Image (cartoon, rainbow, N blue to C red; front, top):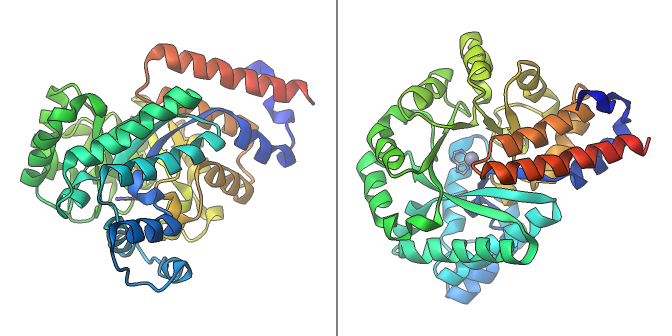
Length: 352
Ligand code: HPA
Ligand code: ZN
């Protein structure tokens, strides 16, 4: 793309370019796409009484001070999800928004333990989500895949039991991840369950370096042998680790609005995305928990670029290209999406 003259694209044109370009999303928790309106609708459908009088009161409760204060509310919200149809509706609502953002491929996290602990059968969770993914592909050509996450505040034995319980539905998920409270729950706590997942041919990723130290990123790489790091923004505290991540072209799934809402950075203008890109890292932009953090993927991109003058059209191209390269999609799909991305940017420069 060097010959394209991306530098000639004016800043005013960036929002439209970011919104319209094809892209992949690699870090979205489906339970984090549960909008307050749907919390109320599902509570009504399932005969659940909520501790909030109305939707505004739910939104007012979204004042987070750190990861744990968010997780407490996120798990409480998820309690309205009971049936296979609920999980279908949840995923379908997200996929409609993703399609509107020109997402052509999404790898979606889900937290089965949040639901099985409440007595929801794991098959209902997986089948409801998988049905929506299948339908998005059939109706819009949007490729959507599932990644089963273990809750790191629970034990490794619980994670192992969850993986075994999910195996009758093995064909419906492509990988495993690790989320929830990071501090005090280092990746090495889950060495055996990740070894088992790898042996089953599953892709492996883990949240690391969001609130936790760079050492957690290192143990996710060395002990869990992950193929991507979710968040990873604290890697910049360790120059040796940054060099390694660049050398290994290890993707980071960065979530800017999440980082602001959970106070990893004070404001978007302070976000280290430009520094991650300048260091040659394979960074991507993602929405994490869009219903809680104030925006879906295009909102993350547009707001981040608006706040950071160091980011330009070349970075917009690089982030979208990284999103495809870092995905677990087949090479032929990646090549097709990257060709469409190139065509999009070629058209943008020719329109100058
Ligand atoms: N970090 C850890 N766990 C999570 C997150 C996150 O950003 N979102 C949902 N579960
Ligand atoms: Zn996350």
